[in-house]
Length: 373
Image (cartoon, rainbow, N blue to C red; front, side, top):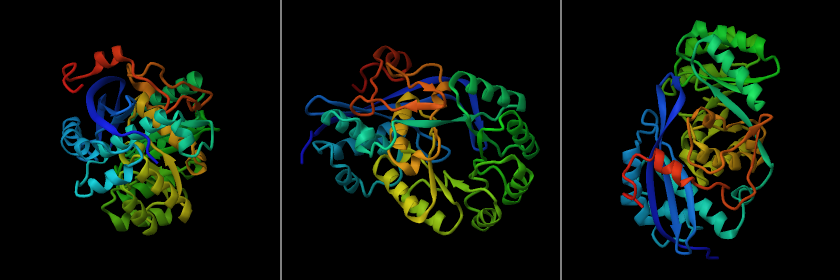
């Protein structure tokens, strides 16, 4: 079967300010500094995706992503059919790292495929549920600031699932959990330490919060502390979610089978469609739960992640981290996703269901207009 062949790939860096600084154990963010990736086909279809660098995790930057797409990925993809993602992966088998550069090109190819076929990507992925429940990620502010943030999210968007950044101050973190549970007795609440605790502090935190009904804990201590991590998992009464320690299918299999985590965060921005699907199927096969996490996506990545999360019962069983875009002071799409009653409905349009607002792109892009077009 042939659909359409790739004629070109280009990237445009953009920078959107955040309404509130995002602070976590491994860094802080004041802007979304990402790249728009566009895959054009010989038939004139344009597939869209977002590349999201995290230098503190993957070593990629906006400059390195643009360079590797321009000089290595785009030439390898030239004249390749949109269905040829496995062939592209084979052609790039000697390219080490660069997960978000690879992932963005593959996602843009999939968007173009859906548009070419006239089918929503959500349906191509399985079409299990028409909507995705939403988790909001709370910043590492004061206790009063975090509580006020949850109140606003519940009032404005009906969100009752919260991921709380911890790992910087153990005492504050314990008090925050008690306060949040008192304020939101019905909410799903979990925490992300971003490796910020030692294994001993992680176990102290879990013991101190055992009455607050945490759903799970994400990356409680450094992955390099393999003995400490295994000890935390063995003694924890809640699941331990792997994220930065589980960025490839091989890492996922290694960490789960070694019992250094019991849940997995799948991020489309770093594993695209192929690897994300392999991770999800592995989790289903061994009985590990999975959620769709956030890479700090704008509306572009939010639409993509929502489609993947809702398309299969493994990822649809838990809320997905789809509310990060609410903290962006602007966006690039003509119709931003709407979160109402705590859910995001999946678009019915072909592809991932969004279009770029060219005026907004001109406002937020950081290269010279036309430089890469």
